[in-house]
Image 1 (spheres, helix red, strand yellow):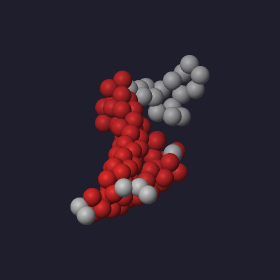
Image 2 (cartoon, helix red, strand yellow):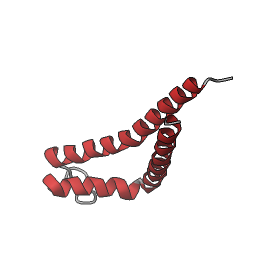
Image 3 (cartoon, rainbow, N blue to C red):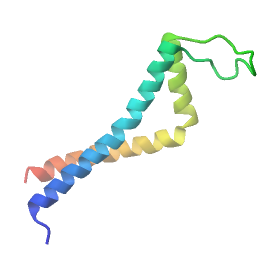
Length: 100
């Protein structure tokens, strides 16, 4: 039989893992967007071979990269949203269970 203290510890560890799994993809996306804003990015379809179009910088590049990730990785975004909702409910459950 598992003790109450061990159950609470397992819940806290699981909740921490779920929170980290929810936060890490957002941080990776923000890193890519900020890097594109600083270094610049070439919009897709504006040049082929060695004839590239002009780089875009700043907030335009930030939103370009963000919309690219959200559009082309929509399935992963939907899975992330479900993970976010699950993690939110699991965190509330953990907090309620720990107060007992």
